[in-house]
Image 1 (cartoon, rainbow, N blue to C red):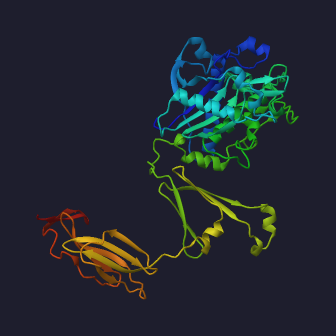
Image 2: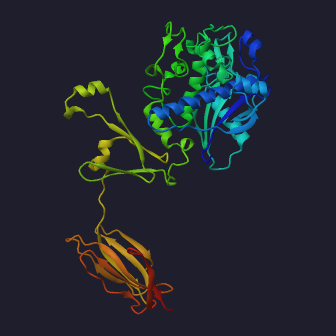
Image 3: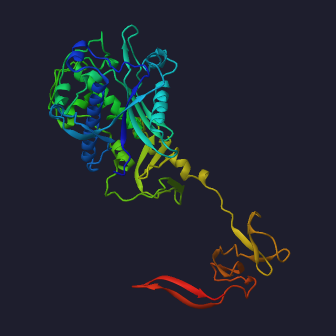
Length: 492
C-alpha cells in the first residue's frame, strides 16, 4: 500500500443539477443522477484496471497494475451487494465542486471539438485548479487523478459536445486526465452489466446524446469510445506519449473485445460482428507496458528499493561509442530515425545520413533524449581537458592553500595564498603523462603539512609544518575472512 493510487474524481459545476446526458428510457430505467454517475465511472475504472493487468501479464511483466484509493461503502459493483446491503472496500470517487457555473463549463469557446474555440485548454486548467483546491497537496507531493466532467453536454443546435475535453498530462506535481460524461449513459453499472453493455446495439439517439466523432452509432460503441478514450488520457497521465498502435493510438475502439466472446454489429465498420480472439483485441503498446513497469503506481511489494536518483547520464567514449548510465538501472531505449524507414532501407549504407534520436528511460522514471546520436559520438561533443603542469603550495606554520596550475596557464586555488610569499612549486612531468595519485597529509586541529604522490612514483617535499599532526600510538579495526575495517589511534 506504499504505491501512490490512481484517484478518481467527478468534476461538478457549482450550480450543476447533478445529472448527465441520457435518453429518456435510460433515465427511467437507471436514472442519470450523480449516484448513477459514481457507479458507472467506478465500473469503467475497474475495467481499465482489469484490462491493464492482463496486458502487463501478456507482456511478461507480471500481474502489476495501478491501484485505486478505496473507501468502505455499500457494495455497488454487483447487483447482489446492492440488494443485500453488503459493505465492501471499493474505489473512492471524489466529488469536486468547481467555482465555475454550468454555463461557463459549457461555453462553446472552451469546447475541444469546436474548431472555432479559442480556449480549448481551459477545461484542463479549471479541473487542475479544482483538484488542487480539493486535495490541498503539500509542495513536492505527487497526485495521479483521472477526472470525469459531469456537466459535459451534447449541444444539438451547434452539434458540439460542450463541457468536454479529452486531455492528459501534468500540472506541476499533479498528474491529471480529464474526459466528459457524454458517453456515460452507455457504461455498465456493475459487473453483471459488462457483457450486456458491450453488446447493446441500441442506436444512438442524437436528439438526446452525442455520437462522438461518429464512432459511437450504437450504445456498445459509445461505451467503447467513452471508457477507452478516457483510458487513453489516463495513459497520458502516467507519462505515455502517442504510439504507432494500441490504446495510445486509437485502438480503444475495439476495447469491448477484451470482455466479450462475440462482437455485435458495428455501425462504424458496418461489420456484422462475430467471434473475437485474442489477436483481435486492442492492447497497450509494448513501450507503454515498459513505462508502467517502472512507474511508482505499478510497483509490487517485492520490487527492489530504487535509488532516489532517477536521472540518466550519457557521454561519448572511444571509437564512436556512448556510455549510458542510470543509478536505478536502464529500463529501455527508444530509437527514432528521421524520414521514411522503408525509403531509407533502399538507400546504400553510405547515404543514410538522417539523424538518429535516442531516448533512454530509467527504472526511476528518468528520461534522457539524445537528439543526434552521431553528433554526440563525434568530435563536436568532445572538449580538451587541460593537463596539470604544477602544484603551488602556500604554507608557513601550517598549510594555507594549494594552487593547481594547468598547461594553458589556467589555475584553481584551494585555500588562500598565505605563508611563504610566492609559495613552493612542484612541477609535473607532462611528457611522460605524470598525474597525481594521492596525498600524504599531517593533520591535527587543521592540516599542518601535505605531500603529493604521483603516477611515476615521485613524492614532493612535505610542505608546511613537517612535525605537525598527532602521533599514532596504535591501530584498530575488524576482520573476518579479510580485513573490512581499519583505523589509526592517535594521541593528543
